[in-house]
Length: 209
Picture 1 (spheres, rainbow, N blue to C red):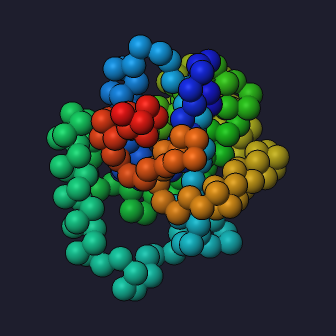
Picture 2 (cartoon, rainbow, N blue to C red; picture 1 turned 90 degrees about the horizontal axis):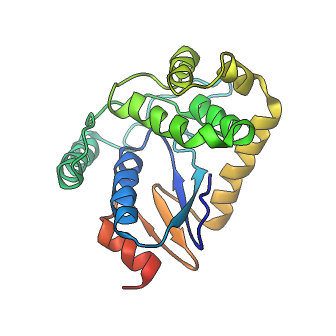
């Protein structure tokens, strides 16, 4: 999704990433300081691809891949950044949530109702990180869609559309080809930064100042 502006920032993100939610707030704060508009183009990224079975369910994290110390460190980082950016959010709700259905719905809304996409995207993040709802559940996504004024049946249509699935896979592949290995990743021109970086770092990325 893009906005009309001269400058353009590309952001790769996944709904289940707490740092993506925090990064959205950092970006909002940076954009609020600008005199000129900044277009933002959002691209999906699949954090759960290595755990997804052919039937769509998630495998448990591989033994030894990420231990309790790792997740403790992540929680502490999220807690610190939450306070720094002034964000209200849960600390640890998404380890076993798959965002694929939400990503499919997002692509469909962006294609079919682009003017409603940003509200839907924000509402999906809020459903997970504020309300602690399982955004992989089609019924939850239908509620989110209804809350932002999307027509009844939009989620069912999104999840039944093979073309949407192919488009999403193409976007995932494009991210891999570009070398995106984690999210959020912010790309401006030939430069990029990764993580929930503060607004000042986003300013340096875009403005070189």
